[in-house]
Length: 78
Image (tube, rainbow, N blue to C red):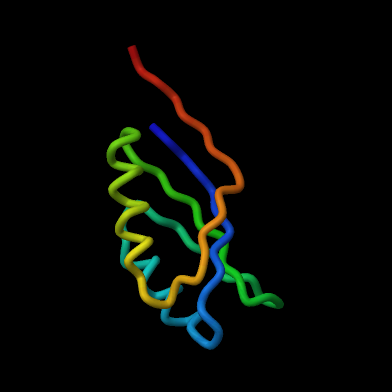
């Protein structure tokens, strides 16, 4: 199960809209920075394909300026 964390930069003035959009995605947990115009995002998906589809969904959010991968972890079950 891929678990990844990202720093998310909204378009100027769109932090709240981006926060709401990301919170509506079931495989995401998002935490807004209190003193910066960024969000911390953690994704938890069942497999790599599901992760790719989730990132495609995130990329379509109009209030998103950039998404930077910070860390990734993947467990495989035999």
